[in-house]
Structure formats: structure tokens, C-alpha cells
Length: 278
Ligand code: SAH
Picture 1: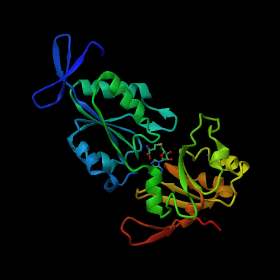
Picture 2 (picture 1 turned 90 degrees about the horizontal axis):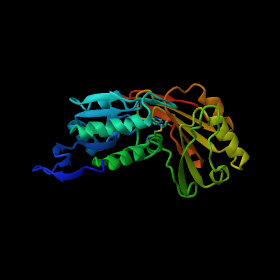
Picture 3 (picture 1 turned 90 degrees about the vertical axis):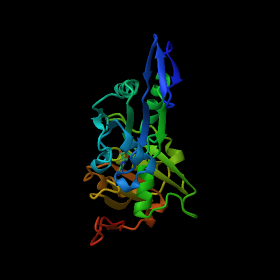
């Protein structure tokens, strides 16, 4: 793209000038879709969806949120754990190509684009190609779990800090984390992609000094009708993860004990209590 330069047209839109030709450049919006409930989108995200020509989305984006991009073409590049249906390089190339066609592109991602979302790579690819890229933050899974379950991530006397970690590991491998740091008390761990490695995470934390009785809150499908919350401890964590099949986050630390396990159903007519720390 080095032989191109950018200018603006009369409407202030960027125009790519190269080889004597002028083209109106589209724009890429990296949009955080939040945890699933469309009411947890930002107003900016809703506006970007309504104005999009094309939406490039992952598997974790709910159908209700996608429906907000009524007229846009939808391209699913779904990611499921390590099985990416479109490799990251292909997604980067696609975003750039669509913007170079002059389209308004929304790259819609679960939660926040810059937290375990590979949004940084997409932003850099746009920058390198001279394509304008704007980031619209979303409510990340840990914050949604914290708010909806009533387990503050920090709490006076219980947790002075919170660490967001990914426990993703190449198949058969172990997450590469600083266990002695993570095992220190007075802090909360919000563990993403930790269902398949939960047994290892618990064992490593206990071996590094965190008590087996440390409370853990598992929240699956946060904010969606099929949301489930399970309350357990580090030493019994592994017994509770086998039945999970949706995305789930682990909140590890004393704050997890503050969670209210009475889960209101969508119409608030009933409540369901799941799991017990006893
Ligand atoms: N960018 C996303 C994270 C993507 S990594 C964010 O900011 O939330 C995917 C992991 O996020 C999942 O393995 C799970 O740990 C967590 N996650 C995403 N959506 C979730 C949901 N609705 N409920 C529970 N966990 C979720």
C-alpha cells in the first residue's frame, strides 16, 4: 500500500489515490458485542451495526445482536476454541479488502475486542493497509459475570486487584502462566477459556499456595437465557466443569463467595438455584 496516499472527498471521507485512480475508502469498526444480551451493547455499537454494509462476526455473538444489523450482509468467520473456520490472517485480509471496496465494515466480537479478542491484530492490519479503523469497546465476560452474579471483582478486604488471564492451551498442553504470582491472596482471577484446563488451573494454583477452599464462581452463557452459575471451590472445581458446553468464565477468589446464586429467569417469574459450595 506504500504507493498509495490518502486524501478526503467533499464529504470528508478518506479517498485512496493510487495509479491515478481515486477510490472512496470504507472504514472498519471493531465492535464489542458484549456478553450476549443486546441491552448490554453500547449505543455506539448499536449505531455502528445499524449503519454497517457488512458485518464480519464470530460464533460467540448472539443472534439478537446480529439482528440489529438489519440490512447488512453477514459473514461468519466463527471461531470455536482452536478450530478457526477462517484463520486470523484471512480475517485480517477480508476486513481490509471490504473496506477498500468502500464498505462500512463492522467486525463484531463477543465481549470486548481488545480482551482476548485478537482485535489488536485486526487493527494493525487495517493500519498497515491505510484503512481507518475505530474500536468500540464492549462489556467483557468477566465484568458481565461479576455484575450479573453479584460478585464484585474487587472488594475492600477481599481483593485489591483483579487479573484477567487466558487458560487456553494448545491441545494436550498446559496454560503457560505465572502460577506463584496468581496464587497470591487478596486478588481475583478472571479466567477466560479455562473450561478444558480447569483441573490444571486448580492444581497449579493449589500447588503454588492458594488454598483449596478458595471460592470459585463458574458462569456459563452469561446474560443469555441459558445462563448457568455454579459455585464451588478450587479443590472441587474440576468436578463441575464436565457438564458445561457453552462459553464459561471462572471467577476465582474470595469475592466469588459474595455471588448471589439465585438466578432470575428471563421473565422474573421463577428463580433457579444452581450448585452449592457446601
Ligand atoms: N473478547 C471476549 C473474550 C473472548 S475469549 C470478552 O471480552 O469477553 C472467549 C472466552 O470468553 C470464553 O472461552 C469464555 O471464557 C469467555 N466468554 C465469552 N462470552 C461468554 C459468555 N457469554 N459467558 C461466559 N463466558 C464467556
